[in-house]
Amino acid sequence: MAEVPKLVLDEELARSTTRKLVATLESVALLVQAGSIALTATVDRVTTNGQLFLYALAFVHLLAAFGAHKTSGPFTRGGPWLALWLGAALLMPLVMAHLVGAQEYGASPACVQLCGYPVAPLTIIAFYPWWSLWRAHLRPAIELGILAVFVLEPLLLVLYLHENPGRANYSGVGATALTLIIAFIIGKAVGRMCAVAAEAQVRLQNESYQTLFNWLHSEVKDRLVLMRQSIDLPDDLREYVDQLEDIVMRGRGRMLLAPERVPLAELFSEQMRIFGKRLRLHAPNIGALTVRRAVAILLDQALADLLTNAVQHGADPVEVGFEVNNGIAQLDIIDKGSGFPASVLDRATTSLHRLRCTARDLGGDLHHLVRPEGGAHLRLTVPLHPSL
Image 1: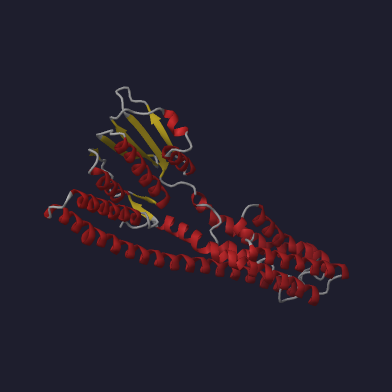
Image 2 (image 1 turned 180 degrees about the horizontal axis):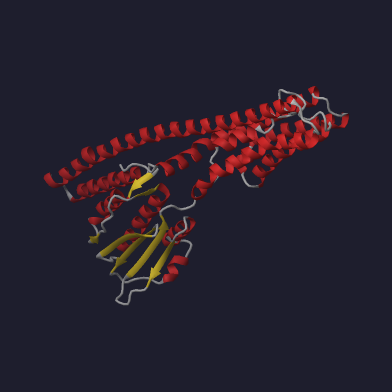
């Protein structure tokens, strides 16, 4: 099978592999934050009201950890929930500076107060692919920008609150910065580990699929063809053999759709074999193009549905056209049958309507084109790289 483009492979594998990992880690991260807040309230010199506030905040994080464990956490939910968690991490240094007093904030050379609070979200940001693929090139700049804000915020607060910051102040700020940078690096390492592990798993799976695919072709399908050609079978038994051959061919077609990237030439070839016994087909030259699984599934379903309609309505011969322009794949099915009205695409009970809905979900469409000479002309369009 064709080599998978690394950007697409890494992105899709990272998103699928880390999603469940993040769903597990989010509850643990919130639990760790709750313990960190409670420890700070107990150990650091804060006002009485400030101590009560921190204990209450720790309890809120405990509840959030329980909710994330039962359902999902901020990263998995995304949107405002993710912004809320990051906002809380950015707001916490300001809160601590108010609770411990101007001269106490950043006074310890070990770390500024509650310096470990941003570690969890920052680590997850580093390895979770929370940007979609078409904006992936922005991710490094966004992540480094967030890291810079977390690192610089304690320093700016120390410079603002202390007229003459001393060695202990700068030491605490430096230790905090180092902690956050290490957390970010660990997150990047975890993300890379997930991608490497997923790549190895998918490649092994693809090898298994390819082995079974070849076995179905060389051991099963070829023997069925040989049986039909060399043995004078009764009509009813020949029909069963034909049905079994169709089942094998459809199974091979489904296996083609298992990898992340699917070779279109093999996909079209399988459909041509399935319908070639019932229709006179003029197939296109596809070349070595490979597409993402979602696009391949749509094209495979379109070929199956549209050619099945042609068989049912006796619309023979059928011309199958395919081309790619500006990243948009275009599939044309043209037959010389009796045709049908465009309103069929609007009927929710028809396969054509469902096919059009799927195409639109991927950014494409299904069009009914008028043929003055008669027959039907359906055109399916879909981006090769849809934003899923």
